Image (tube, helix red, strand yellow):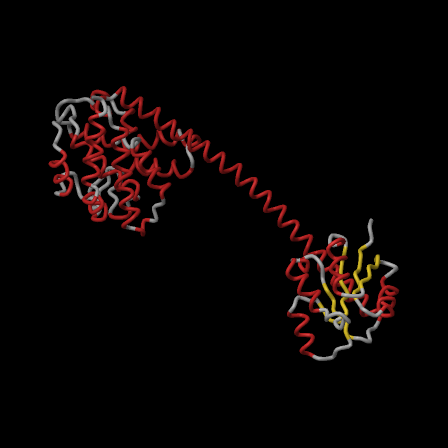
Length: 367
């Protein structure tokens, strides 16, 4: 094991010899008679020097120059400096410590005391440097783990989005009422979501939240896959029992989403459950399945609920005609589809032109 090196900086050879004699048994001694040579040695031997014993009154300039350069270059983070001086002034001591010196030893000094103080400072810095190395290693490890987790999350997110698209294709293929549903509903949800994000910061929606809500809005009625075709496609008004059964598509949707938990990110799974279960809740508590009121209803479901109502109105169903965009707009505002949050209604009002433009563009695409 290599011995530690001590750099003794003093313009008097006799002083350097005394200090060298004290430490020679346990340390390799490097000597410098002035500032320039001291800094050269530090530059060359930085990784092997354990401590610097610095005389304060050098012939070329005081030891402050050495401290100043060491501080500028960051060397004091690795090497403790003990100022050795006959100066008794408390102001000098304050100045030395203020410039980064670890300790001050006044001449004449006791051999045992100076050895102990040197050993203690070296041990202290060794421990500090060791801990800093460990922290750096841990930080590097955490950064690598974070990168891996980020890649895994991104992969899971892409899988989740692909799964959503597959399910939507199935819904559109099997159920006529879902035809041309996905992109329109997503875009309207995105438009209203952005308005909520911009005007109501209390909901703390991020860009990622808005995009997730838009993506997942198309899964709101996935529970209808488990509803009997006899009820789902009935051309006449549903009976009370059939209506209650139809309402169960909200909870049945959650049952399906639970089976997809492992292929969704935590955030996507949470929002998909909220949207499936609560997109028929209403602000006054007269919705279903739980009769939630106000902001008991998750904001994701509040946004999708008004989109779902609007989209249902402007599209023909087996049991009803389609309404014009203007009719649907005023029916939503008038409470024909239940009571929505005043904040969501304000965002719906602000979004009217954008929504109608998007809807028109969507309808023009097949042509």
